[in-house]
Every structure is written in C-alpha cells, then in structure tokens.
Image (cartoon, rainbow, N blue to C red; front, side):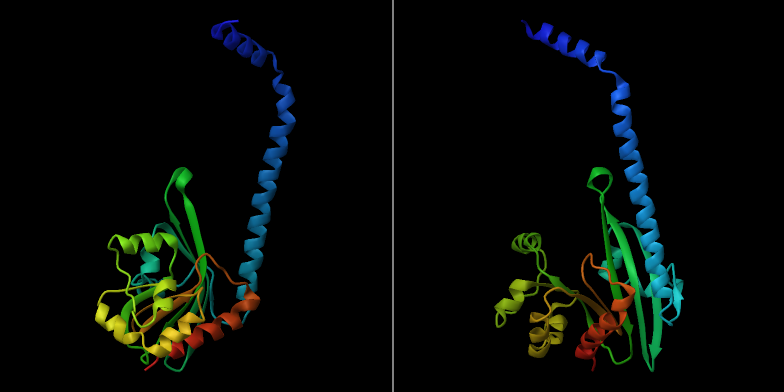
Length: 231
C-alpha cells in the first residue's frame, strides 16, 4: 500500500472516531483544573490571614513607602510582573524591619517562570555597607564567571569562593567588607542570599517562602546576619 493510501486510511479512521468519547476526559480535566485553582486561592488566603494575625503592622499588598528603597537591590530589578505582598513591618529603636513575600517573573510564553521568596529587610544607621550581593553559586554562575562575569573570589578561602557568587560595584570595598569572620559565617549558611548597600540589607532563600509560624525563626536568622554586618 502506498504512503498516500496509508495516510488517507488514517484520516478516514480519525474521522470515524466519535468525539463524544473524549467529552468525559475533557470535563474531568477541566474540573480538575478549576479545583486546583480554587485550592490555591483558598491556601493563599489562609496564609495571608495567618500573617495578618501575628500582631505586627500588616500590609497585604506591600508598603508603597518602602518600594523605593527596595528598588535599589538587584533582586528587585530582575524580571517583570514584580509583586510584594503579606508584608509585616516593625521598628526596634533605630532598626526598621520588614518581612514579606516577593514575586517576579522571568521569560514569556512557554519560557515563563515565576520566582517567589520570603524576604527580610533591615535598615539601620549601624549598617554602613558596600554595595554587594552574595548567593550560592550555581553551575550556570560558574560558566558565567569563566567567560568574564564578575565573581569576587578569595584565594585564601577557596571553599567559600567555590560555593558563593559574590558581586559588588566596588570590588575592593566588597573585599574589605568580607572579613574572615564573615566568610566563616557564610560557609555554614550555604542556602541564604544577602544583598546590602549603605544602611540597608535584605536576606532571603531563592524560591523559598516561610509560613506564618516560621516568622520568629526567620527573624532570628535575619538578626544574626544583620548583627554580623553591624559596625
């Protein structure tokens, strides 16, 4: 039988399939999709409610007054469709603290990817930081470094240099900032990302969100990082 006849026979067979057979499958898939969407909406509302009940000033859609400060960090310049929500604000003496969810999107269409993480923010006159950003170094970062993208390494600390990507506007200032004590701290904190400039600092874990019951632990961990960089 020729290829033309085979193709025609397959086409005729396809035409003979009753579309009613597929209707239940389509309905089940649609119901499953709607059910998943409802579940996600309910879960997010429950999560937001949990944050609102913690007794701190709560801003469900973030705080406009803080947005300008956040825009100075590399994290808040990435991608598009940026959104801040579930923000808690607090002040302790001269220290301003905020904990919130932050989401941004990279790519479009089938390459679209959403990135969401919980972030803790500090602003205090006891911070006097060089502009820097540190995060665990991935395979792609290593490739980037090999072709000339900035990665500030410390020959005396090869393990630190191998595990972390460290960048900053003024390389010498960043080197001066990362003392032996601070490098040792980060060697035991492989998963955290920290960015700082002047009197501000943020800490987060990439694509990791905390639950309301984790706020105290998250704040305690952030305080350790804050204390590490205080004058």
